[in-house]
Amino acid sequence: MEASQQLTVSLRVRLRKSRHGCRTCKQRKIKCDEARPVCGNCAKRYFDIDRCDYPSVPTPRRRHNREPSRSDADTSVIRFNSSMLPPSITTRPTGVSTNLGQRQFEMRLMYHYTQFAALELPATYGYTSKELWLEKVPQMAFESDLLLDSLLTVAALHMQDLFPDECNRLGIAANHYLDRTLAKHRYSLGCIDRTLAEPLFVTAFMLCITSWQLAHQRSLASDTYQIPSGVFALVRGCCALHRQYDGYLSQAGYDPQAIWSLAPSKDIIQADHPLLYDVQQDIEMLLEAFHVNTMPADEAYVYQDTADCVVSLYVALALKMDHTILQRLVFTMAVRMKSRYVAMLEAGEPLALALYARILTVLGFIDHLWWSRGTNDRDVLHYSINGISNMMPSQYLWAMEWPLKVVAGEITFTSESKYAASDYED
Image (tube, rainbow, N blue to C red; front, side):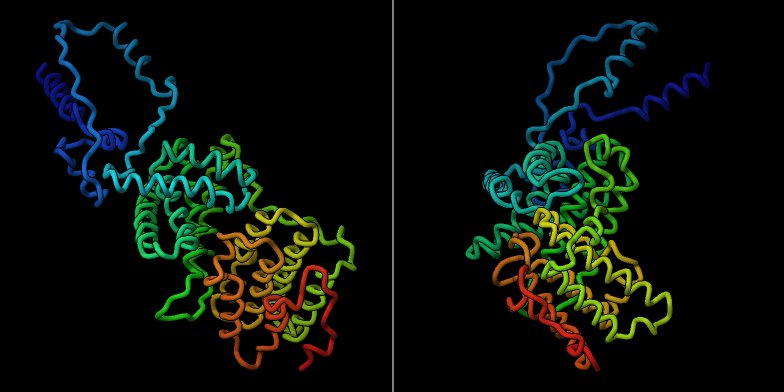
């Protein structure tokens, strides 16, 4: 009897909860200290919060002094089984500021996202651009603080390019929401379940887009171009996350193979297509000039495989695939290739740099969209090609001739081949 009493006491201590905690702590399923206006947990998590969202105090009810019967216990299990209840929709995510001015600013960012930024994001994962970014993501953002912060980051970055007078304020806002996104994303990776898989995955892809933009921002202190290795790592992580949770994501409508799908075989394209013929000639002469056929077999295989991937990208261009899909292919091309090639690229190997420049030049043949091309002051194509040229050792500058001609407008989608075999001879 004594052991039974001890067990009852220990259970009561372990199951004790705060009765009137804030909504954030309740959603996170942690004990709230009920401090007002801001509880201890939220004060640590949100530096800009002014007040926690506390529910109204319920009217006390008289308790009935009777022991619960077995039928009552069974009924309580059924009544509170969350899988049988409809999913709740939080119309004000807990991460939104309670400060009136800040909330108005966030509403402005949300409006800008739905009216402008979302229209320039890439179609992917089996969804069209409109279906994913304009319809699905804003709806999920009303239930997920993680996705909401990521959405606000993208909106702030997009507005920076359109409103230079507010550049400083929007830059601070973008960094603020990006920091919150990264902190929540890192935390959520340790507790993924069915409800978290979709917003976590979409947020990962939005982080890739954000990092691509930030990687190509020119700095007044240093304008030295750097290979966007961080973007490559994020895209690889996003793809790994997709593969690991493809069961959940497939049920949500995402195509597990969509991000990996390349253009059809180049054999179906007529060989006399001007641009495709031109780039094939250019790459063949490039590989010959670097004497790839005399390299060790494993190294030669990596370069030949990379060259084939580059050609497949221009096949997609010749097929006139949707421009948002083409931009997504450029964005993820480096991680579609062998990991050894990426290592060569990051090490600044001349042939690896020359091939990467030819990947980026695809952007010069398609519509100028914000997320992949930047603005006139921060044009990703011109900035990257000129930056790679500066990285290239002087004895290999000839390898940048073709990309530089694309940037200069000397090579167009319908222009005839401008190369002869003698152009790349030693």
